[in-house]
Image (cartoon, rainbow, N blue to C red; front, side, top):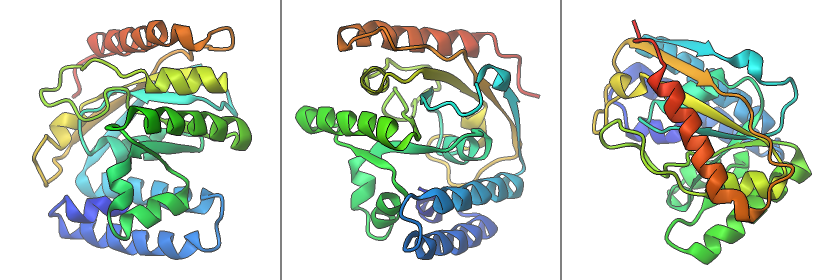
Amino acid sequence: MSLLWALLVTDPLIIIATIILGAVSLVVSFFDPHGRRQIAIARVWARILLRLAGVRVRVDGLEKIPPGIVCVVAPNHLSYMDTPVVLAKIPFEFRFVAKHGLFQVPFLGFHLSRAGHVPVFRDNPRAAVKTMSQAAETIQRRGISLLIFPEGGRSQDGVLQEFNDGAAYVAIKAKAPVVPMALIGTREILPMGSSQPRRGDVIVRFGDPIPTENLTLHNRSALTKQIRNEIAAMLESAAPVR
């Protein structure tokens, strides 16, 4: 995931840090079948990037997350800056569910696969369902959380979009709780179409985990609506970023 930044930003220090740590992560991947060391390196990269970009992150609601939780994290999506922010500030191990096209990019795709991130086919409903079922099995078998952006992509205007059912589907299949997450301020740090991060403040706000043990796939639309409502409420109640 981090290697994509070498193609997106223009800050030379960020580019150098991305290339160096990306290369280290790739080498480590040959001796790291579970991807844990690669994720650790990605977290180091994320913290360095935020520091170089002058981004300060405040975390609210972390006390709501039980230690050792295995869950589906469902944040809103405003900016490419969302990726380093969640890597730096989510305290438990997780993998991204990312669009399949990223896995076809030379070098980057190999890196994503080696780290254990999960591709999803947005344009092929049958393949998407199969991937989501495999993602649920990953949670159950490996005990690793997944992060899924329910909007499917970045919001063009900063307004919360309608949610896809993917996060709810995976959580229900895995019988894992969903943790709604509100990201506030990342769009101002790196707006759509920009390649130069700006200094500023970001808020990461965790909501209460939503249990799914007693739900079936027939409940996924209702769960998706609940996740969106929780994130919308956190966004609306957010104090201005200073």
